[in-house]
Length: 473
Image 1 (cartoon, rainbow, N blue to C red):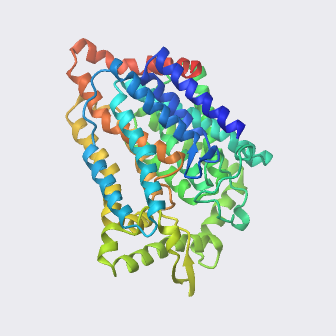
Image 2 (cartoon, rainbow, N blue to C red):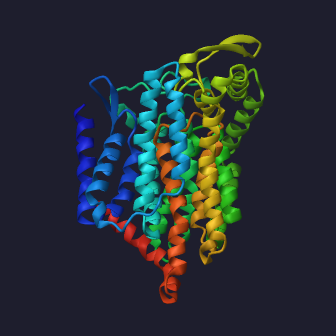
Image 3 (cartoon, rainbow, N blue to C red):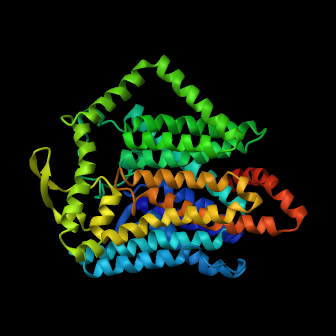
């Protein structure tokens, strides 16, 4: 408890220091870094009513600083996606009122609003400079570098950073490791799949930052080291979904990145081939896991088939009740339903949900699931629409954000990833940045010609500034 309280005090003081000595916008990268590195186990119960995690301390501090410091910020513009988010929250409220576990759903709704919706609006209303987005990118990479160091120790020294904190019960707490994959690294995340998902989302951001390094050898060396460590941890998670997600991210970076990013992806592919040739055990591990996945008689094969079974039972139960098909059974109600169904020729209890899409259908109905899926789709379409006619459309920055959002969206079909954990903070912050980017790009294009021509060149110096500001923070 003393360790957790000390960490909470430290994050409050550090965020306050940066916000008051620099600016509130300057505190956003530090907050992004802190939101990622702390595990859910860094928490204590408040009067037995709800948990106060270190992430919530960070968020409440940001909210307080936002209202204290907002007078010194330029007038906030209207937040993109505000109507869609408002409709989603309203629909979740209706679903909560009709929930089979009202108290649990009410807590989940409150958590969604405080933990994620507030973060979205704070970031989208505060970011006024492109360099802030670059700073946040760098903060994400630094956070995943720290988590990857912990993962390295976990893989080779059998030490977990989570062991420093008291045990905590969360959504994956009761999962039993599968035989030959019980050494999967999870760092400070709730599960190895979540850790792998965050790595797959951060890798395109890292490749983009490397393309901005220019002649800075030290900065490039750090980013290359971080990238290599991320790939090592990604492999050590032994998670099929994140592996595929990382490949999707690399493929999209190759298609939509700039010349430096394409070269970086090709070098990564060359390095991967070299490792597979020189370390045949790696290739054997991957192929064995693939064979077990397509074999329904293995644990890995059952895990894969379970995802499809979830959709089947969701359609079966929802299609027989029009009311529940619309509003679902209530946020976070899946684990209380304990539905019985047929799987693998036997009757089982569906007490594990390995798909956010299936969970959204069951908990908030078809409407809630569609509204949630529309969030990244609408953000990507808005960015594409506004940037098409701008000179900034050649800038890979919004494309890189879009790639990471697509990676997250793909993982929503593979694991219960939405609405909790560090990877969800990563998603909502990325969502805010791609939503606000068209306005930033429009300001540059509509600025005087001399200023507009200088804007692209400022990205690199600002990245240099990031290095210093983050270390000072």
